[in-house]
Length: 244
Figure 1: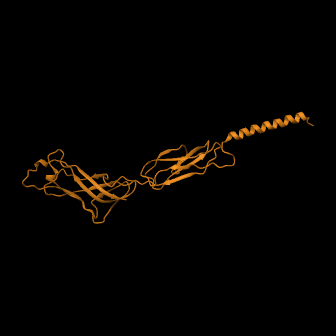
Figure 2: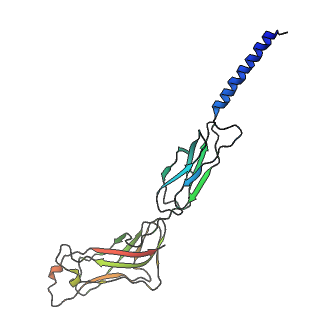
């Protein structure tokens, strides 16, 4: 049988143990037990669609003591912070996705906050990149020479070509054979309403059905000495009109 003094010491010992356990529990996490970890709230996201390969997103989460994990395009999760800037792959044809979650001090995870968007590389209205095949260094007076052209589409989506224009530099290289006097250009022509599809990151060679070739000739000027135009070269400039 315990004496009153012994019982009092035992009760005091239990109280000390309880206080120590309580301190440990309170130190484990700042979020009250039984509550859930709130998901981050996105405050800034890329446009949908976007034409930028570098994108930034931001979010807020007022819970103390949390950190964040992110995943891009359903890839591996990584530690992150707001704002997050990342590079996307423009060749990906499906929608892009950013996923963010919060993690508390006990490694509990929130629900995932996700945002999906698409990438669209808007085609250029003018100045599409062309590789022009055709030699005009041996023009003969009065003889038309067709100029084939390769239309290269560097965009991430298909385009439809609706028009082409060919321009020739005002003078030759080396100078001396003025274009206005000695050179004539015949522009390529499209059948009314025709569009030429150019797949994404592909090349189409013109002329093709429904599109006549561009052509150049040296004017036949019987009363003008055109020997100055021998062995001359001319710079060609192409422009185009395209649509999605």
